[in-house]
Length: 336
Image (tube, rainbow, N blue to C red; front, side, top):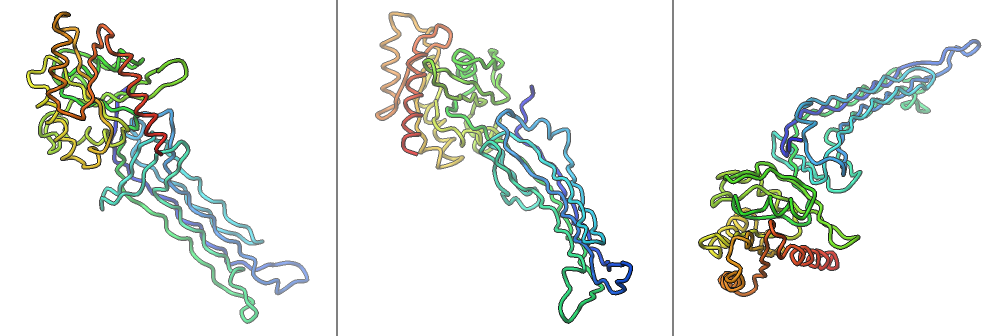
């Protein structure tokens, strides 16, 4: 399934139905008085959060959503039928913006949460509503209220517990495939991962968390280079950041600082998230040099940087990594 995280749609709510100007006509009642009913409300266009969806793909191929108008009122105090709402199901983490103004209309973060993109017009009042002691036969009613129309840009920001951060070919996709059922594309060339993917990681028997494989970052990504801003925004929603740096990197500490710099340039808030460094591909080191090399690299990161050495191929360090991430997530949940 193709991953789609950005789409622009046009929405229009329905116009409200007009109120009725009607008078009761009955035998032996020549002046029955007003009995015009109200018009029905126009339908609205609404977003609704759905846990089963992971992309905005459905909306890419259906970009116009126009709700029904309300029906006019009628005599005998009959209210017009309201127009049906249009409900668009979207993944959790969807942000809606007014395309023309850039204003944020809202975001959908919970299952079943609804966000109204275009509210249906109110139905007009029938002439019965305007009857008073001094005006017993009003000959007017309200027209229905117009609906709203706007262009809306929908952006999906993945809501995962752990987000992987690293340069292309750091081993992120291999890591995700080894700890979850996700099967991201893996190959030996830059930018193999062109689309974010989610995987569920089991910890013990009854515990799990969601991990997101974010396409590789390059220096200057915060300025739009490479895959740039399109995927940096996904990291905003991750609770814990896992930096993946291969032991084969010539300057791992420098690479770590570059990655941190790109995140900070994109959003200061990212610097407050708990983070952990996974030194990947340790299976490529000679067994007798492995421990010494890992310790040397870990010291190069400086104080306060937690490091776990792993190999997604051999499985070394993977259980320790999973439990370490789980403990960090549990600590965050306890704080909230």
